[in-house]
Length: 335
Image (tube, rainbow, N blue to C red; front, side, top):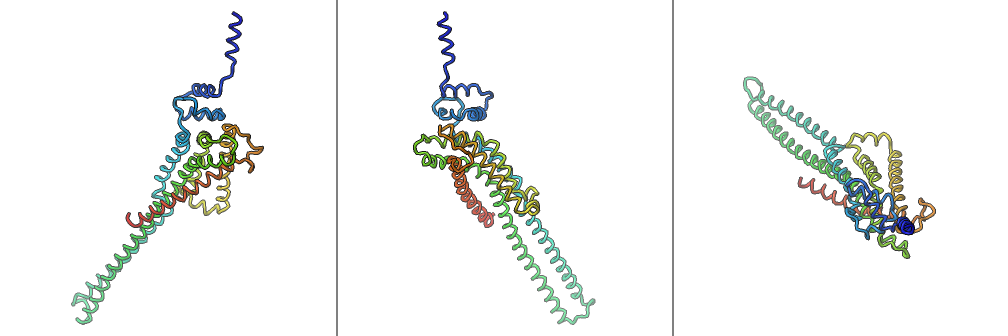
């Protein structure tokens, strides 16, 4: 009997395999939202990520789908909200309002001149109330009629030019609202699409290590750790790019370029801190010895992740802005 109890205790004390640990942690996660459960598991044990593709976990999503849920969806929502709030506001809207006011003032002035001319025509066209000779009266009337006709033609031409100018301003407004609202979304997309560059680069940086799944690990960790940093960076981007639409246009003129220089330095520092956290656990997942200092150039993984993101962002942003410019040209011509 004692032998059986001893064997049972030894069996209970046997350590679980990594796959069994992952399965156990997944079962122990509270709640019913798969994304939150998956994020908690990744936060707690990044070194178990290599077994995520081996163990069958109901509700566990693929790396790219997980990254889209954690990084892209919130960017889509914030970009749509920002576009809705800023599409008819900002500096261009002020220019459109000023243009319309000037047009109305000019039309009113021209109408006043025409009214005075018509009154003068009535006055001199009545024989009993003027001293004009018939020939002189007819010449004066003809000149005034010509003046009225030229005034009407000039006003119509002026209206056409101002309508074209307003159309151009409206097209600029739409394109700028789209560019300012879409750039933060491009930022989040670059975080996701950088995975391919990260994986290919790490294969060159660590040719003797098994880094085939490094792109998947990057997506898992970037989404798990980037949920709140990404949201904060998105909010900062929206206010920086669309500040004039929120009444912050005067702030830029007041604080000067030094403020924006420090702002973008701080923005990049937050982004880099986020990358450091991701890379720290990527070393664990791939079982690669980390460098002595996380913030040095010896941290090959940090350099690779940073450069891959920047390159992908530049490429996507260039394509996006080119498409935005084409939309501007189309709107100016056909809208």
